[in-house]
Structures are given as C-alpha cells and as structure tokens.
Length: 494
Image (cartoon, rainbow, N blue to C red; front, side, top):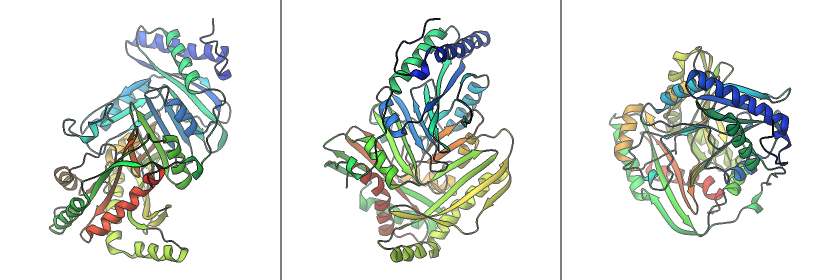
C-alpha cells in the first residue's frame, strides 16, 4: 500500500503507523456501511511531550477550533485541535442532549494504534468543550455581536488530541479521531488526519519559557464598564433588599469590562503569565472562529474518576496581604466573617444535596480550608461522593450542579429569575462550565471564572460577587476589581 503521506516531518506517522491508521478507518467505514449510521474511528500513538501552550498556539493557527487544558487537579494537560464531530445543542436541555448524543456516538467506536507500555491512556477519544451560564436569547445577546459566536453548548470530538500526564513528563498520547459516514472513503479520511497531524505537530516545536520578560503592555484605546460602576452598586443594593425581604437567600451579580487596545493580544504570552502566576489554577483556552475564551480558574465544577465524584465549594473572598502577618489578619477576617461563612455554607449545602441521591456516601469537611491565590484568598470545601450509581457519567453531574450557588444563587429558580430580569448582562460562557469527558464518562469540568473573551485587540473581562443580606455595595465592587486583576495583568493591561 502506498504511504498516505511522504512527508518526513513526523516519523511517528511513518509507513507502519499510516497502515495502522488506515486499518482503523477501513473498519469504521465497514461498520458505518453495515449499520447505516456514523461511526467514530480513533487511532492512538505515543509521542514525545510538547509544551501544551506552544502546541495549542501553533495548532490553533491551522484550525478554526481548539482547546487548551492544563489541570490543577492532576497536572495533566490536553490540547484538542480541529473537529471530527460537533455535538451542538441549545436551550435548557442542552447538557442532557449532548450527553445522549455522546453516548450514542461512542457505543460502537472503532479504535486502534498503540500508546506504548506504561502510558495511562484513559478511555480513548474525548468529548471537549463547554456550556454557557444560561440558555440565552440570541436576538438580545451581546455575546452574539461578534462573528463566530460562542454557542450555548459547544462540544465536539477533536480531530487531534494530545494528552500529557504529570506522571510521565516526557511522553504523551496522541489520538487522531474521525467520524466516518456510510459511503465515506477510508483512505481519504486517513489522509486528512495525517495532513492535520503534519500541520499541527511540526517536528521540533519548542516550548516557550514563562517569565515577565515575555509580556508587553497594551495601551487601552477604549474602556467600558457594563453596567457602570454606580449602576452595578445600585443593583447590589436592590439584591440585598430582595434577600432581606425573603425573595431568595443569595444571588451572584456579574459585571463586564470591555477594553480595546492599540495592538492585538498575545494569547500565548497571556496564558504563560497565567500559568506562571497561578500554578494552582486550571488553565484553559477555547478557540472558536475569530474568538478565543481564555482563563485560569481556581474552581472546578466536578471531577469523576474510578467511581468517585468530587465537587468544589468555593465562595467567600478576601485580598492577600502585603506581608505574612497582614495576610494572616486578612485570612482570619475571612474565616471569622459570619456573612462570608453564610455565603460559603449555602454553596456547600447545595453540592451535598445534589450529590446525595447518586452516591453511597458523601464526605465533606465541617470547616472550610483557605485557598490562597496570588491576589485573593477564598474559602473552599471539597465535597466528595463515593461509589456513584452505575451508569452515571460526568455529564450527569454537570447537569445536576450547573450553575451552583457560587455562580448563580440560591434557591436556584428564584435567584436566576431575578438575574435574568435585572442583571442586564449576557454572560455567555462566563460562569459557565467547560472541560472534557471520555468514553467511560470520566472527566473534569471547571467553572469559567477569572476569564476573558478576546477577538484581536478587544477583550471582555468578567467578574462577579455573591450577594447576601449583609453585603455592602462598595465592598462588593472592590472585590470585583480584585477578581478582574489576574486577566488584566495577563493581557498586559496593567
């Protein structure tokens, strides 16, 4: 059989590997023809590990869809490039609809290749992407103003995925994925995958080093707060009045800062700065057409592995101190604040209540820990459910938990209804959730905070605060300024 590609750039896609890839595509084509439906084909190989930011930055220029993920949980990384298959849904049922489509797609997936002995391969091809904070009205959504909008549900099977593992720092797993339809030419499918790999994985791709010298500042040409500072503080006061009147217990108010600068943003440099400054956060970037959604979030929504599920309650914020003693004083104010403890307890109670029906037992510490980041510190409580019911995957839990009271409010129905009528801001993916799941339903989904939506030289930065009965509008506004700072600094705006 002639080689699918004669390019010398990728030895791992030599003649033997190309034959193996073609075999997978041929078996998938036969299955698709026999069953008269699309069949997922996935081929794996072991690859020398490449810095994920460098790989993502190069690969995104070759495709119109990309994802970068570097987990704070297990230090693993994922780069997803190109699209083998889209699972796009809308409305309130978008998460269960995506889950059902994914389960159907992977039921008879055809796999092949080899990752090599000792490499934790996971469960083959992945579904990646995310979900907006709420189902939106596209006719009214400010999020839709730019071309190639971020949909309410943007989930897809990447054509190329590269997973790096902290336990194997020098090696990674490459997967090439395709959905083969009845009548497709398997040789053409395999050729397309080889071509994509040669474009996205050039030999000698070098990591960029982190450090402040990599970053240049941007001069703002236009600056806009949505809503204005005074209007937002007025909304905080209105929310407090409703809470005291018993309408709901907590609500999370968001605001946006939109900045246009004199030059396009250097996204790779911004991500490197976030990784360097916030090593305990989960780093992410989703490229979709002309726009990119990036961030470094300290909060995950849910993680599922080995039959156990974890959720994180993260609510209550204080600044960091300029000295160790000052920091300790601020930490004590955080942990001793009745207002902040109440805000945090609301979130933890909801997580426990949401997980309890699905797990044999629930574990959560009685007292929260303090999560310290470079510029702020938070109250944090891990809620873990052990021995989950058979057949439940991570998307079941995303549906149950999203959005948590840490991003929406409590009770959910009443607080979200008030936000829809009063917040005056289309959040899009801010306070939404993004991540990945494998064919066995394992995976990770983070809460999309400390983030920005970027197109060329325009960036929209988002922040929000949990409002309870004792909230002070000026203090809450100052808290949003602290939460905006990580992205502002990473993008060279200060």
